Image (tube, rainbow, N blue to C red; front, side):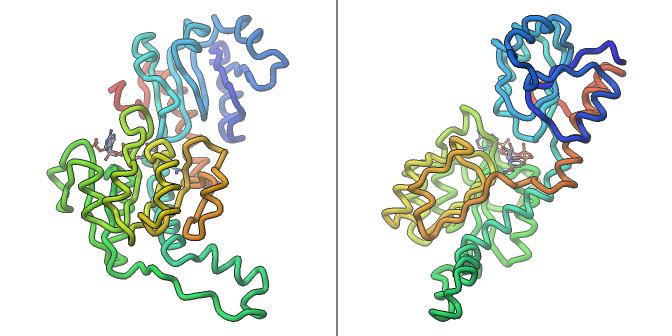
Length: 317
Ligand code: NDP
C-alpha cells in the first residue's frame, strides 16, 4: 500500500506514525518550511488525512481534491466540517468507545475534586500551611445528597451515570430526545435540567448546535449550591457568563477540563477559589490514547483495503 499518500497536518502519537509509515507514504505538513507550498505540490496525490485537530473544511478539501477519508483522533469532531466533507464525498471517522471509561473516570474525579476542593487542599499542604496554620478549612459542599444533571447522556454520559449511581447520586438528563430505554427523568431543555439538579455535568459535543447552551439563564436555574462540571467541549458553556455566575455567587463552583479557547484559560477563572481546572486530560492516559491512535490507523487501513470505515461519524452512516 506504499503508493497511497496520506497527509498528516500535525504530529501524532508514535504508535500512529510508525504504523502509517509502514503502510503508506506519509506527508508531514508540520515538518515543511513552507506548509502551503508543500500542500500545493503534493495536494493532488493525497488520498487520506490522519489528524488530531482541525480545521477540516472546504478550504482544505479544495487543496486535496482526491482525498477519500479523514481519520480523526478523538470522539469529538467539531473541528471537522462534516457538511463540507459530505459535499466533497470524503468519509470522516473518529475514535468512539475506546475512551469512554477513561473519560468517565476523569469526569467523576473532576467532580469530586471540585466539590471537596482536593486540589486546593493539596496546595495547602504543599505550601506548608498544614504545619504552620493548621488543617485545611471544611468544604462548604459535599458529594452526599446531590442530584446530577447530565447534559448529553451518550456513551460517556451513561458511563458517568453508572459511576454516579454508585455514589448515591440521583440522575437526570437532557439531550435532543428522550431515550426510551433509560429510566432517569428527562428534561427537554438545559434550563429545565439545571432547575432539577444541583450538579450539572456537561458531556455533549461541541459545534454550532450546542454553542453557549449553558448560558446565564441556565446557571441562574442551577442556583447557589450549583456546581458545573464540563468534560464535553468548552464552547457548550458561555465562559463569560460562567465567570460572572461564579463571581456573583449565582452558582457555587465549577470543574473544567475543557475551555472555549484552548489552551487559553481566562485569568478570571483561575482566580476563583471554587474552581478546579484540568488541561483537557479527559482521555489522556497512555493506554487510552494508544487505543485511540490504533483506531485512527485501523480506519485508514480498512478504508483502503476494503472500502469500508470501521467507525464513521454518525453523519456518514
Ligand atoms: P455520544 O455521541 O455517545 O453522546 C453525545 C450525547 O450528547 C448524546 O446523548 C446526545 O443525545 C447529546 N447531544 C448531542 N447533540 C446535542 C444537542 N445539540 N443538544 C443536546 N444534546 C445533544 O458521544 P460521547 O459520549 O462518546 O462523547 C461526548 C462528547 O464528549 C464528545 O463529543 C466530546 O466533545 C467530549 N469528549 C471530551 C473528552 C475530554 O478529553 N474532555 C474526551 C472525549 C470526549 P441526543 O442525540 O439525544 O441529543
